[in-house]
Image (cartoon, rainbow, N blue to C red; front, side, top):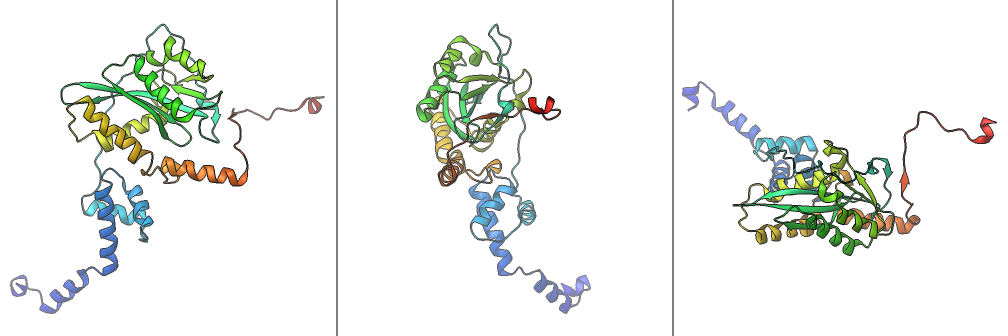
Length: 293
């Protein structure tokens, strides 16, 4: 073979020895491959955190290179379907969430509705998240988009959290969230109503992010035949994966449960939780009456 290629034997064996990987490189590649297979929907940044938690010293660029070479990069399908009907006669509330400075859980809840495609039908999922920790505190699944669906998710969140009066509930301007039954339930709990402006889904970005994660990591790529089947999978994903083990970059690569536990420990060591605050931008500092005189 060397004679046909006009290459000396010494050069051939030298290149073979240089190309042989060492044990450290093989250990890094093995850790990245196991993490990528175990967390098939993670991007390279989260895979880096998973590998580093195992004690392997590797950077994000090296992980990206290995995942690209081994064809382990996740492929995302981007879709956008409008499910919000904001053309209704109900009262629309202002966006209070944009002015909040969160310091603890149960200060701001965000809610939304999305659809899930089954084998022969569509079903609808309503979720309620705690905006501070990104934890799903309530959810409900149904074949109908009527107000009973988000009400079931809201009641589940109230039973789970027992929030104090003054919590801000944020959603879009959909008829399900603006109807009298839903608003009455919020007023019973002494919650403040907040809504995104029409055509601005990014004003409810935390909920939109969860829905994208749910579809990308659990729903897409699977075929569900019945409502009961998808309900079992959604319950497992929320309770066993998303809330407890999935890493969130916005939380310092902690899961919502880990983030809440860490925050509670820090709060006990320092001081009681700060009250909910409003943060308004100013053109200039407001002078006191004494200074004006």
